[in-house]
Amino acid sequence: MQLHTYNNPKSHISEAYRILRTNIEFSNIDKNIKTILMTSAQQNEGKSTSISNLASTFANLENKKVLIIDCDLRNPSVHKMFGVSNISGLTDVLTGQKDIEKCIEKTKVKNLDILKAGKIPPNPSEILQSKKMRNFMEVIKEYYDYIFIDSPPVGIVADASILAQYADGTILLIAANEADIEATKIAKERLEGVNANILGAILNKFEADSKSYGYYNYYYGSTSEKKKQKRGLFRRK
Image (cartoon, rainbow, N blue to C red):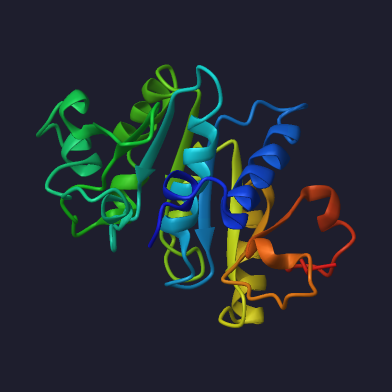
């Protein structure tokens, strides 16, 4: 788990995230894409790493305040990306145990804050679907220009489908040579079933040979490209 965009901003991987940021900005023309959800079909496809690096590139935009909310209340890991503890966070805010100001942490990246998951509850889906969560999302949008939501895999639990209702756009992460094709198709269908605005997909953990232009390791499929590709997957050209 590395924050490439901060530790090595001139790397090919960092450039790939900046390209991804540009693609999202262009998708912002007809609709205000302010809250972005990232999910995957399966576990360990690299969501927390990808969302942290992507959010970091948005924080580099002039005068933009960015927040990452760790909504993976089953296996939180955003705090690990930034080397902080997960003692308190979102669940503590929603249950009224702590004020939001005491749970949001500034990171080493300028203009980038994180809200950790907090204590792992016995009923994650119910908490995420609660009225308090909905009200919280409406309030927090007033303080940030971009909000990124890290969620559990949509192919495993219902949490991501619930969270999609709070997001202006959703990105599906796919791990190269690891993701199951059928599971990825099912994940996409589940997002479509809740009317999620799927911005595209990131192909993560991609190893390209030296002759390929794919050295970026990450590939973003836009909604325009989606029409040209097979349903459920975004393939490299």
